[in-house]
Length: 281
Length: 215
Image 1 (cartoon, rainbow over the protein chains, first blue to last red):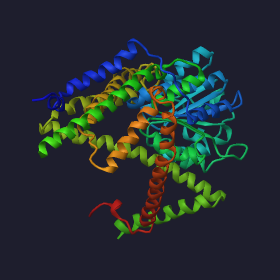
Image 2 (cartoon, chains in turn orange, green):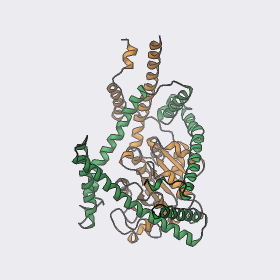
Image 3 (tube, each protein chain N blue to C red):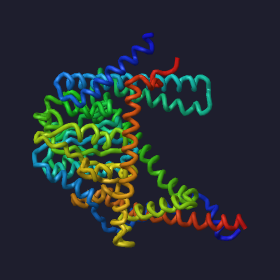
Image 4 (cartoon, one colour):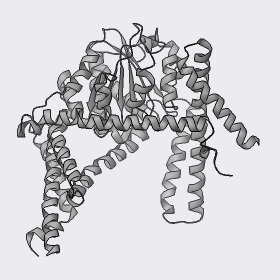
């Protein structure tokens, strides 16, 4: 059996080993590849920068543990940017696994900025009902979420004073892993509700890389004000905010992993073609 | 008669009300729509209870009959009831130990067991994708070739190493995402929306009755 044939029947454990090395080496010895900011990621950052200090933003963390590696870094960075700009955050989730993750992210960033729970930010937790909850938030967020994640009535919280619905917020930040998520927020809220100035609610989305292609249509139509696609989008966002987070550190790894997978595709096709010719002969 | 006609009548009335109400910014319509949307949330909550009950029943039956892989049902049921009891107990017993809030057992189990396990499953994808790329991604037609070229350009263009290989690669990747990808996605979105409208109308008008179930 020649080298080509032996490679064709390569033990998949060898492939796994190559991927493991490609993932581990950049973590042990970072390369520090330069990160380029896409216009969609720049628009995400700018949309939050435009919000006047002291205003309130909605943060819908619609994901769970499965998407945590991709979406948690951008959640942290969004909270960081909001707190730096002295924005108040009203967070909630339409995914049942979301509230503890949102809680952890808020608790991780808030102390650095001296922000207090209930005064500067709140986690309203999970509400089942998907699109119906989105529309309900548009009518009255207190009806949709009468109590926070810990069961404390929201009416008693200073952060909720004057916050009734979308007319009182300047931007909706959606971190989305799928359904219900960005697409539904655009469809149910973007076109239906207006802010105090009579304008449609600006929506920015951070989503998994696999769902990003679907949302480019909304960015181009002006229905999404910014988009972060996967870990690469999160790294671009971290660069703008000026923090060195896990997404930035993961870019070297992701770069090499992509190159390795492309190499496997090319190698697999060359060997497959060679074997095909031999078989035909 | 009531078994089929009454649900069809309710669907017709509620469906028409919700559609018309969207286009009529009148107070009674808006209030009525909000009320129905509130009902939808409550009905979904009951559906979740039904789902849990059904899962518990099926799992218990598999254990009782010692069906294939019945052992996996034990941790499933154990985890289900443990988390449910810990969460619901917060209604009567003091936080933070019980309930779902910060510092509760429920929260700690979720963050320290479920989250790492899900992360592990997600991470395994990288290994299987690499293996599948080597064994299964064969360019045997023009379409497969176009797919492969677009995939390679986007995969490289989206990560920092792409710009090092060729500084125009990110722009090429952006063009693929914003032009051909966008055109295809819009076509799919519009097609799916038209399909949803047609299906919705068929349900409202009683032409589509599969949702009522069989007799």
